Length: 368
Ligand code: SF4
Image (cartoon, rainbow, N blue to C red; front, side):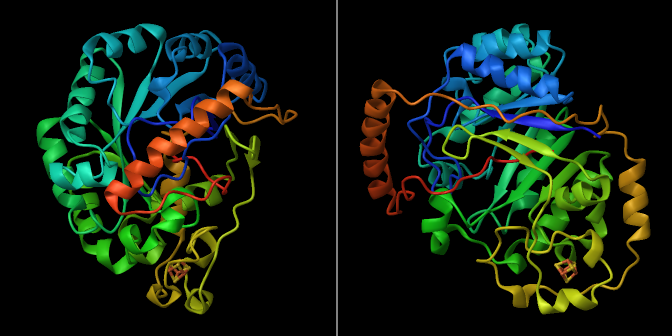
């Protein structure tokens, strides 16, 4: 099984997404403190590491930690908004450091929607340049998208645009909005989609990708909203393959080893044939309407067979290890964090949204 660890390199960002699940904290990393966490993943015999954030490219030692992880034998990945990868020299430097795969986040190919969602103008152009630069530097490129109220009706338009313009991108990841934490928690009215709102456009998007031989994963979408592509559900794959995940959170949660997935279900789920392999409304999906769930009556066996037969995720299995401490809080990092909070409060006011609750539970943007 392919166990992939997540290392939050920084928690600040140069964008200001109104539904960010990992807003800034006073915790910081040095190269040495990151190396210890890479060592931890190696000790567990993990297959790879995802360098994430915040926006990981804002850490000055990012190439150095990528190089170290690569030298230790990990498959090195990164999730980024693409802002810095839009500079060809930075993309080359990351490729030279050993970055194998980058997930560039794009929420909408409608420039004005993307800018609104990112709280920052001009972001689509930069993300598209990042895809080109990474590919030209030999880094495999995937595209990530958080499903929300503003893009729910045109997920297929995103895919049509991106497959036409960047045909070499072969894998796409959708994360349905997690409304339980960060800024998403306090801005649900603005960003939370209903499941029905994205059902049709997600189906068209997945159909296009499937038809053209591309692969994809979908997280936090109940199987009754993606029955035809149930094998692509992240939760279902975790259930079927019994995988674990270690996340080195750069906040109070510190290192978390996720082995048991607590999912929420509705009364309708009790008669559903996919109940045993479905994540339902996932573990923090309480803000979604359970009345939107509807049982399906198809056999889970072909789905299980498809997942077990797919070797794409395979790698060495995990070994347990003690949970290490993550990051440092210093007087200087507290001062920097206070300054960032002031700037972010102004950005929130400009966008007419609320800043996250300080110290609230947050979670990484997952990839598969
Ligand atoms: S009804 Fe419940 S168990 Fe069945 S697919 Fe929908 S969420 Fe999953």
